[in-house]
Length: 388
View (tube, helix red, strand yellow):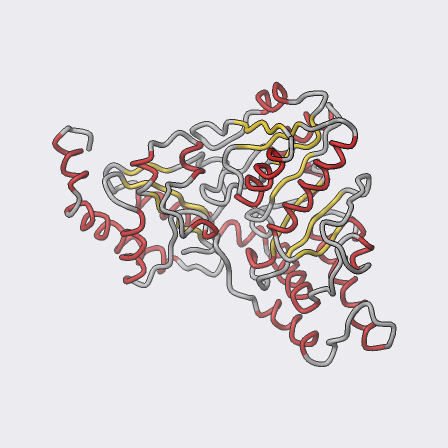
């Protein structure tokens, strides 16, 4: 129940990776036959990823994951803008930390960043983006789907506004690719980040889509790989596994979405019976497999530990910030009080999940919540005050 954190490697991905680990292990930059076989496999993978995204192969650059892709897109476009006297950036208050921390670094370098409100429903308003756009705006970066509450942003409408002002737009699509339809031309984005391990590819590999009208400069220094844009010997097994996993996810997307949506709705219906529970973010504009709720009067960490003892893997938010004792910045951004945000639970479903697993979770979850509330002085106070 924690597939937003990572997924298992699919059989298709593993089958694609093994030859590159054994017999076809050559360096794609080598001129001999072994290296050229690897080079051909690399370009086939690039073509496959491009097909899945509705892009051209030359617009796909392989990276070590979504974090690198986010950093690359934002840092390079920001610096290109600065060279033209444009040092204003726009993002949202609930982006992944790969984006927020990059923006914070750029603020220290003299850039001005506008953080758009995402409101109680977790959605950006196009009119608020339009009001924030300026003549000196160098880049807009808004995620396609939030990694904690799963809300899907109106990226097409946002991209149209950006292009009307001649501003490039980047989207972190790490949680969306492989789970909902993602076509770069239909979205209208100029740059898009993805990560293989979110859709049953291996960890440590991702990609950046960059529209051919834009020119990227390297984030790192080194060799001439990725058309002189991303140095370092390519992670060929990872790239082949990611491409195979994305192709499989794309070809079965409709049936997977229907299956996962049904499981999500069953979870939401069952959880609604637990008193003083709220669903975070829009249900209508939401990833098929995302359930994010808050149970008032308890701590999310205790809830996760007891779920784990019951054999249920879950999270309270992003795995990238699991060591923090602070409440989720995403939940604070949609207006939740800190004491409520501390009781959050994220369940993230995948096509491999079953109705039996959902039913088991709905058997265990109400009992665990009630047990924790029975021990909570906060819950007793809330009942005494008539708040629940």
